[in-house]
Amino acid sequence: MHQDNPLVRGLTRLADLVAAGLLWTLAALPLLTLPAATTGLCAVADGWARGQSPPVWRTFVDAFRHRFVRGATVGGVLASGAALAVTDLAFGLHADGAPLRLAVLTAGVALAVAVLLAGVFAFPLLALTDDPAIPLLRNAALLACAHPLCALATCVTTAAVAAVSLAAPALLPLAVAAGAAVVARLTRLAVTRVRTAPTRAPRRAPVGGASA
Image (cartoon, rainbow, N blue to C red; front, side, top):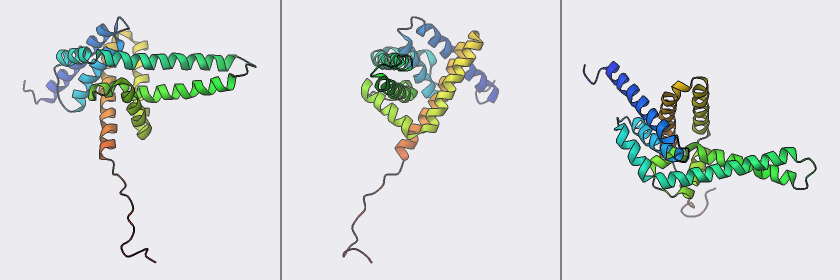
């Protein structure tokens, strides 16, 4: 059958989705390798978002190896921030009468929002850039703030993947890979809009003085 046949293309993409999902599932099993596995999957999905058909194994393994340290750092920062936010929120919600309850609760909410904003696009950006971990997290948060609809769609996609995986664990590899493909497209869309956004030119004083 010819490669331009829609059926062939569809079956090929389905096979790539399953292969990438299985790679992610196996690589993420130790949990400590979860950030690197997610980065590898995002690298494959970014190729799909660019309309390419990247070699799944080589693309995944290259990203897993070469971005392992940065992925672990980003994952560690996000996990630490999430754990601290949960601790602050738990204290603020249950410590009735504590003198610093309001301050701790406020800090917990602020930290939770910061972690959410940074985490939405963190791993897709790992596949796109060579930025160090902290600047990358800052840029991810700024990207989420600049394009809240893309960020919201990414959160909804992630929640849908989690729901499908919990309801039918056997579908975990396919659901994760399909979700990564959607998130990669959303990330590309947000980044493209940022790059093409018009900049406001500085106002110039009228020649010959102010006009009436």
